[in-house]
Amino acid sequence: MDTEANRPIKALLTMDEIVTVLEREGAQSVTSVAEEIERARSVVHDYLSTLRQLGYVIQDDSGAYKLSLRYMELGGRVRNDVPLYDVAKPEVDRLAEKSSSELVTLSVEQNGMCVALDVVQSGQNISYDFTDGTHFHMHSSAVGKAILAQYSDERVTEILDKHGMPARTENTITDRDELEDEFERIRETGVSFDREEYRMGMTTISAAIEETAGNVLGGLSVTGPAHRLEEPDVEEELRSKLLSAVNIIELNYSAQ
Image 1 (cartoon, helix red, strand yellow):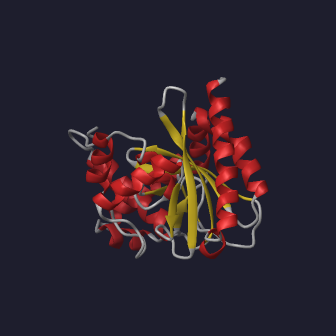
Image 2 (cartoon, one colour; image 1 turned 135 degrees about the horizontal axis):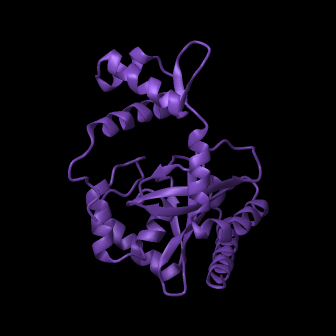
């Protein structure tokens, strides 16, 4: 599906650049944003003032601009409109409670990228830089590969052509033939692994969530320290818990 606009509105593109800078860098002065996106300071000031008037940015005590919590409000409303979220939420929480240091994530695909709908960690002994709403490439994550493995060849090609296969770590698969071989293993076993492909030191096991007709709804993942998940007993235990949770989610979704 072609997502490029026929005649993009330049003002909206500029606004997106400004919001992206604030998202990436945090609170910034008008001058800093102007330098970052190579626009006149007066132009950037007008954009930021308008965004502040609309409630999308605020100013801190130093006068720097930063994104407001309005985005959290909008994101929460959008997430609640995804039927899978309400159905899966109890199982996501339950799976997290059964885990010790692992992170449990419910993700969906949107516009060829994975989006984390819900991220839950029962214990706080390990810090993960991963939150609700995080967007990430599909080929470099266990859940992305689990979903792609169920897609048609045409859809996979479309996604990879659009977003490429950038390497997040030295272990990320960046060769399409190698990724296809991975898909075969996923279809045979029902689970996908990310062995330090998204983040060094971390391993993830994931499985796709499908509806009765076979359409992919999303995926469920468990992430933890690589040294722990590489233990055969731990891996098998998490695999069993993960597939059980996925099965319950699929049954509850079909019963709606």
